Length: 430
Image 1 (cartoon, rainbow, N blue to C red):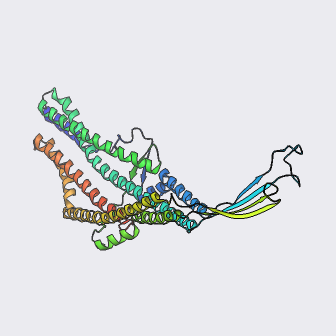
Image 2: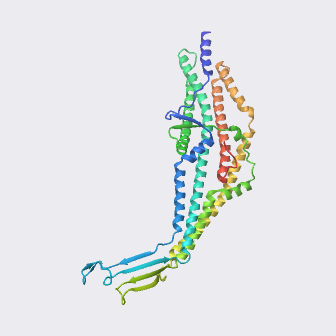
Image 3: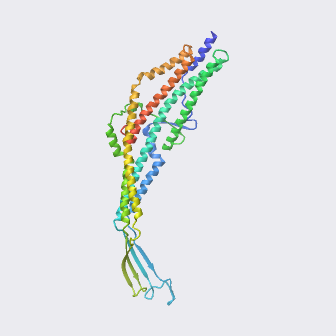
């Protein structure tokens, strides 16, 4: 009778609730912040250094537009003797002195000035689209990390519960093993399962910490653990069939900044080809000169011009290079455009398949599974279930929970990919 009481007391301790939070990702962090996605995105836009650097690049390119509007400065030259031996004067001026002056102005022919201005304006526009593309890419990374952390944390809770239960069981069995109430084989088997779960849990925690580290860099929030606050109800309403695939593709062609960058690269290279052809035409230099006494008459004033003779260098190499760059960028644009169709098709297919798989699950299954897990503990406590059946159920319970959270993330990730590939927020995430 005493033996039965001891075993019952030991097993009842396994039913104590486990309320502690994961410690692995907080051991070196001082603050834990629960944050919604919109709050995280606001912090990201304000504080991310990479975005800030790209904003400065926009300012730099706009300044180059201002520079391209400017015309070449005129050139003024002045000369006088340092010392006149006849009069023994330094810098002689006046009637007996000598002064020469010149004024010249470069006139850009073949409309080079306007061509350079158009290139600068296109580069400024290009820098803006590069900013939007960087914003789109980093925001996609932020959202993916945010939701991945959330669902991994849900999986971590399953490990925490099972590890706590097995740890209590292993500690209790250690105390009772020497008294003959529990076999050594059973203790070893329970500990083996416990250590296996602890290793899996440690790998999961390291995965979460890696994502947390990346998100801290994006948000510039060092020494902080972000606990995502996800609106599951809003996510469950996402419908993969809300928009036809043709609309998604057309939206991507219109909105994606990387496609606009590819198109602008083609435009800039075409403008550069036009400029290089214009550079084959030499510029004209107008000149005015005055010489007080250094010519065949006094106070000589002349006007003239100078121009390079394009006999040897007609900018042939630069023109050939610019022509090749046009073809290169045209091919790059077609390649980028061709990839859009496949990206959207693949993401839409994943969203539909994962949504269908999630909808096939019986809504009461998870609740019944959770309830049954408590019953299994009671049955094992009462010795109505073998150790192998108990551990098999524990493993099945853990696998089902983890797979469910993975399926939820894969579904949500497909919708976020659709947002990323279309360059919009057609599927709002919260």
